[in-house]
Each structure stands twice: as structure tokens, then as C-alpha cells.
Length: 387
Ligand SMILES: Nc1nc2c(c(=O)[nH]1)N[C@H]1C(S)=C(S)[C@@H](COP(=O)(O)O)O[C@H]1N2
Ligand SMILES: [Mo]
Image (cartoon, rainbow, N blue to C red):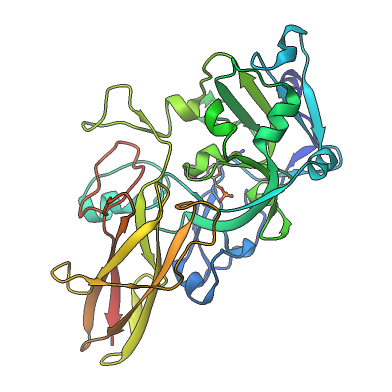
């Protein structure tokens, strides 16, 4: 980002662009699909894994590139008209990395999922072309995030009852698209949500955040689309009037015939399911195979998942692998399941998984179209070759 803007926002901490690749971590081809600036987790990686995704296997969604930030010089600046001190011109509250470590900590097990997860199926299953990263189902990960409740930081910053929106700013380079500079990645969170279950995380699965997932500090907004969980946070604006950015007005809204002209804001996520199986896996004929997978709904936990191996004619219940999500609230993460399948004679087959959440929402045969390809919740046909 330019020195000018850095000064204007009062952002600090040496954010240098990583040389070369916009993603820092190693991306072995048997663990990730690469999509430009982004890396998708291959679902077969999760087959022998526990509840959370190992840090090295976690998907990466970057608007620009991973910045390398020095936690020693980094600080978080909290400012805006929703703070008691707003009357003092230019006043802001600052927290160093150590300040945050010294505040009360909390661990939450939560999913981060891109709103565009599953987007490629609009084209491949429904013949609907949509722009954006053509994810299959690997733009999700679950981790144990440890950090400071955002409410603690906001209270110490003097948030007032008049505050309506809280907007974290990322320290990664400005997002430029079609010749327009939209500034740093940022998206407002309603104050009520910000004060509820949001945390400022500095640890992921017991280790400092990896550079690609937001080191030194990122926001975690449980149950909301990934874009709300701003990485590399450098400033937080607390406002007594509603805030707007590209990310809540232009992008991450549902546009199309099924939606109002101004679009519908993407907040919580859809119901989805994935097999822990290679895409077009080869399985031996006439043999028993234990299919495994996971289903999730960020609207609430999963009531059941059904499997079909015959194109959706017959559905059978999958067996839950752990009774309960290891999470302090329902629906923050996913449900593991398994399903014994006897592979038939040689040929090409599709496997389908269909989840229903506790609210009674079931994955439909066809997802509702929206122009930017968010929230694909349709049943995915996973191809397998039996040989
Ligand atoms: N600063 C910043 N925060 C960001 C992004 C980004 O590009 N810059 N991408 C967002 C999007 S769209 C998603 S889906 C998640 C992805 O988190 P991950 O890369 O840790 O998996 O981060 C969100 N936070
Ligand atoms: Mo995203």
C-alpha cells in the first residue's frame, strides 16, 4: 500500500509484499488446487484427519498477496465516531501484539468458508456461467482459533451505545480491479454481531497464525462468510453511522432474478456436503469401501446427511462419526459422517451427499442462481471410476 494511505489510516507494522508468490506456504499438488491468487484444499486430504484442518492444508483466499508483517512493530488502531473519544480529533486507541496477548483469551472452533465455495458447479451442473474463483468444495476449513473477544477490545476502546458498525481493515495491498482501486480489504460487521461472538485471533490450532491466514492477527466472525473474517487486521473503525465498502455494496451480495435489485447481503453460509475423496477417484470393483465426508451449515448444526449412489433415486442415511461438533455453539463448524458402499462392476458413477440442518433446510437439487456465484448449496455429483 502507498505510504500516503498508510499514514492516513494510521496503519502500522511493516507490511512488505512477499517476494514472488502471493501465497507463502508450500502448495503441494496432491494437497491443493491452485486458482491464481488462491489455493483450494483437496478434500481427500481430510480422509484421515481429525476434526480440524491442519494449518499447512488450510485453503487460502487472497484478494492480492500475503503481506509479511512484523508483530513487534505491528499495532492495531481503533478509531471512529462510535467511540467515546470521538470528540477528540484524530484520537485513536492502539493495541500492540503484546497488549492483545495480555488480554483475556478465548478459543473457538469455527469454520472459515468462502461465500463462493462450490461456485464451479453453477457452470458444470447448471450451465450457468459466473465470474470468480471456480472452487469445487475446498474453500472451507475448520480450526481452533484463539484470541481476544472483539468485545473486550471494543469496550477498552470506549465503544458507545450509538455505534452501529464495526469495520476491520486489512494490511494487505489495496484491491485493484478493472483499473479501480477499492482500497484495503474491509467489510463492516453490525455492532451487535461484533460484540457477540467475534474474536481477534492470534493462534490457529495452537500455533501462531500462518502468514497466509492472517499473521499476526485476524478477525474471526463465526458462521459468516469468510470475507467478514478480515486477515492481517491493522485498524478497526467503530462508527455511529452505517459503513460501506466494495465488499458489502458491490461484492458479496446476491444479485439476480430471485433477489431485490440492490441485492441481498451475504452474511451466514449455506448447507453443503463433501466427500473426503479425490475428484474422479478410482475405486476397485466389487469391493466394500467406507465413504467418508463432512456436512456443514453455518445456520445451525446438521441433523442428517443422506447418500445416493444411483443419481438420486435412492437415498440412505450416512452414519455420524462424532455426535457433536467440537464447538461451543451449534453450527459453527461441521459434522463428520461415513457410509459403507459396495462398489459395483467397472464403470463411471456419481456419488451424492445431501445434508439437512437442524432448521430443516435441505440441500436442493439445484442452487438458486445469483450473478456472482455465491452460496452454491445444490447437491454435488462427485464422479468416481470403478475399475
Ligand atoms: N485482509 C484480507 N482479509 C481477507 C481476505 C483478503 O483478501 N484480505 N480474503 C477474505 C476471504 S474472501 C476469505 S474467504 C477468507 C479466507 O481466509 P483464509 O485465506 O485464511 O482461508 O479471508 C477473508 N479475509
Ligand atoms: Mo471469500
